[in-house]
Image (cartoon, rainbow, N blue to C red; front, side, top):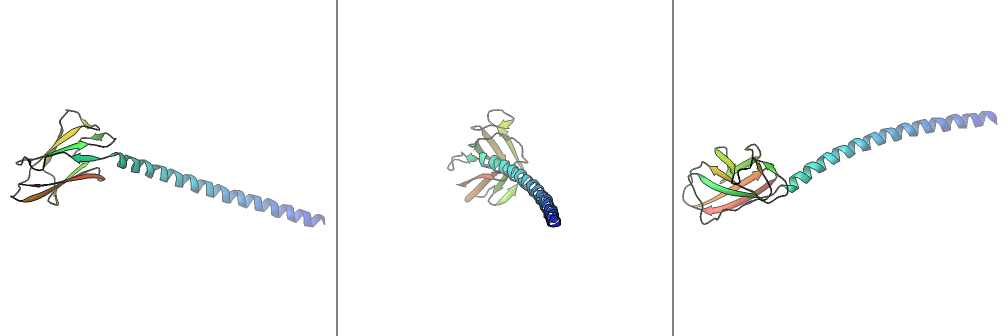
Length: 145
């Protein structure tokens, strides 16, 4: 009888040790997963906060250079940096452009407008300009020259 009790106690202790080890591994895994999800959530929230609107009058577009006015209609401040702004004219990626704030700020605050001077030659007819900010927020303008 005593030997049966002793073996049951040994098995019980072994089961506790194994279950504790499994619980520790699972807690560590859940903690790491929680950290990754939290980081991805922050990135997603920041991208949702970004929003822009092209505010040009499509019937009165200035060309040579092509002037595009873009308003920050989102909730976040965006640095005025060409690395964060992508410009496509008629589907062609443009690198020969300048960007400046109309208010003179170094950052693109919510409600502020920036001017993009795009050095591109446009033929007469229909054209499309698409502006991306941080690769997520974008707006498009269709116009005729």
